[in-house]
View 1: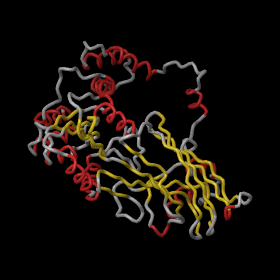
View 2: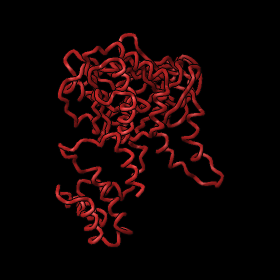
View 3: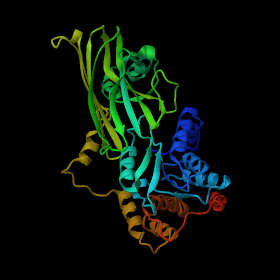
Length: 406
């Protein structure tokens, strides 16, 4: 799960195009009887706006500790009684009532980001009233071939040419099978943009997306890869876009490099098959490109098969540990984790567990406080909060900070 800093949340709020669009969509959706669910509330801006616009009740869900800042801000603005903050992932949350509005902005550079899409599908199916509204309603993924040497150069410069006379081209297979955030101008597009995929959050059933697009090059130039962005439809008449011809937003756009630059002439036919498949917590991207000179199947200018899977350097040792025939045995660190987890039986305090860990693994820790920190991290990841234990009140925040100073 990606963790944003408080500064990052501030940057999102400061993006006036993005935040104003969400505010307008909420304004159109909310009535005095509305129940609102804000998924990935962060520091709470959308939950606060929902209250400001008159929502009767708001449920604000956020797994990270940024939720404590949201609680404090809600209290400072007089909304603490109308917002219920829930520190968890939305797929683990149940609500006492169905939401009339579900609002979320969990994008990375693109909407296909970690568990964003599965979370929205789950929320629509379990937590949204039959006539409820999803914000955003729909997002369209757009793609174009781009001439962008300034974006392409960082992928190849260090490996193609270095001051030491070394052949380092083996790294190119990894670097050119990754993508990065980038920004281009409309003048850098070599083809007319096409909608590659449509994410209709009112009907979407799968987080995986796959489609093919084909162009005839509209001008000459050197193609360095693909630029992908999204156009968002939040509500009727409420949209924003991070397209090259739109004002730059906090999201940016995604540059997918080709294995090598391709000289394009007017009339060359470019076909690209793009696939995004969610594996565990992240997407594996694939982009296969074929360029035919003037559309002639006998004159292939390029035939690239690329995937972020190829961009990950996997050592034989690591691959062996993943093999189905591998018989694993715990190393010392694994034995320590197993020992600590076995003591989390709902009866022992962290202090007791830490002292036993020091006794069992005396060479692992510099002292009792070191062990307590380690045990605390495991507790954060794996222990459940008792059902009768409520979150710390906002007034306890300063006390919590005093604990860490001690």
